[in-house]
Length: 169
View (cartoon, rainbow, N blue to C red):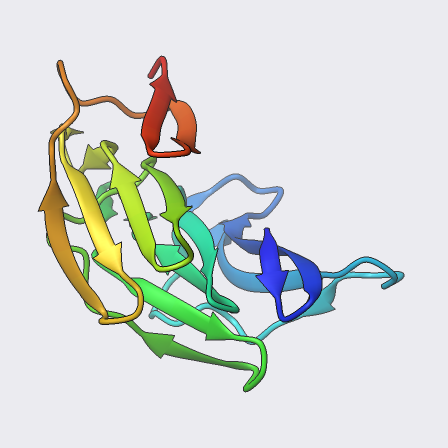
């Protein structure tokens, strides 16, 4: 969720249908704004297949979708480096610079309406300690200080002032 212009928006990206099978993983996207009676269907998230466990953030009036993982027919999971950017003014998607260490189940949060932190998460076969910093204005990545202790996924948290807070995992 975030502000697009003067309005608050809520986005829903990706997911899985009631079959809960690999073939039901979706590229669906939708948005809701106060005063609307229903969700608005958006163009599908780019990519050849749907994915799960991506992180999302709104920066400067655009929705950013980071990583996630795909599942094939044999049940194999693969973390993806995709950064997909939805611009509501154009009703169109574009691509951002790929995530250096592709992650899913990461915490993503915005700092000062320009930087997005991806904290820890899962990469293909293991947790990562990485804190990756995406500059949404310059469309480039850098490394931040890794989390203390082992990497995690399934954690909760975000940014409070100039402090990163994450719990559990």
